[in-house]
Each structure stands twice: as C-alpha cells, then as structure tokens.
Image (cartoon, rainbow, N blue to C red; front, side, top):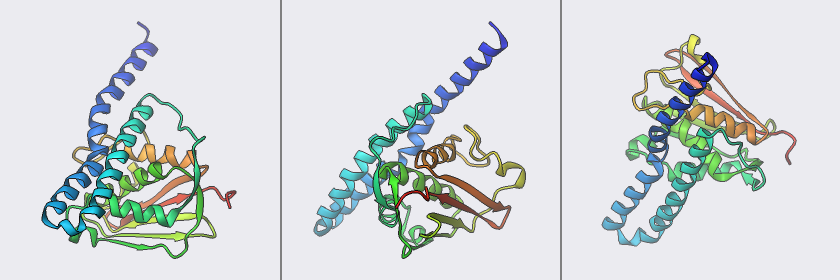
Length: 225
C-alpha cells in the first residue's frame, strides 16, 4: 500500500469515527427542544399547541440535520436547486426560538437587532443549523452574544464576549476536524457553516482576540435582490 493510499484510508477512518459523534452533537439541540416541549406541555396545557408545533418542527429539523451531516461526511455538494428567497430576520428568530437554551438566564445572554432585515436565497434549515453552531460555541463559555444585520452589505454579525481565539489557531477554525479546548467538539461545525455560506453564494469570516471575544461576519450574495 502506498503512502498516498494509506493517508487516504486514515482520513476516511477519521471521518467515520467523527460521524457518530457529530450526529449526536449536532442533533442535541433539536432533540433537547423536543424534551423541553414535552415537559412544558405536562405543566401548562394552555400552551400545548405552541409547543406541539415546536416539537414537530424540531423533529423534522433534527432529521434533516442528520442527513446534512451524513452528506458532509460523504463530501457531497449541497443541493442548491431547492433554495428559496428567505428573510434573514425571520430565520434568526426561528433559530432563537428553536435553540435548546439551558435556562431563561442563558437565553438572556443573547441580544438581537433585526431591524435591518434583508432577503437572501438559500435554505432555512441550513441557515438555522449554522446559527445553532455559532450559538453553541459561544454559550459553551457562557458568553454574552449580540446579533445584528446590515441590509446594505447583506451581512449578519454575530459577536460574543467569550474567551476569544488565539491568533495561531484563528486561521484553522474552518478546517475539518479542528477543535480546541472544547469537550465533545467534533471539529465539523464551523467547517460546515463555511460550506453552507459558500453554497448561498456568500462566505463567513472571523475576527477574534484571546480573552476579548469573537466576531463572525456572515456575508450573503450581494447579487440577490
């Protein structure tokens, strides 16, 4: 077996090992939303219909996310044929609503300003998946989060007050399997966020200073009306 074949086999083994952990890690939020919804239904039947809807949405979203992770592991391209025109403000609201915050206090760490809304062409679940990853990363360190929009540039900004990223690791965060000081991390979240934004005709970039926080800029295609 040549060194090239050996390296390819090792890379494939690494992807397979990461698959199970990645699915468990990335579906945790939709499944936790289901659990929370059930608990609330038990305690407050008057709100049952609202949370039954959340359960249905989260179940569907969880299944779709699993399929996306499998596709990513197989290095399949994202299908753009079903992309539609979407409101970024509406999707951010849905992501905040569906995210499984540990408590009201944790949810209170997130501040949003969605007045400068804009339309982009993409997929709702893919966008929510990307936002879930950013939320999870920041809330892991109990950081305060600010999310705001710039319609002129078609940018979404996501800034936290967390521990920041060391300069020598900043350029690696969008590389497959790269993770640092995070228990349970698979190193696939941010790379897939990058893949999602590129499929939308945009991109994602990051600025960070250690101990001073991190800012992501999600850039959407300026060619879309």
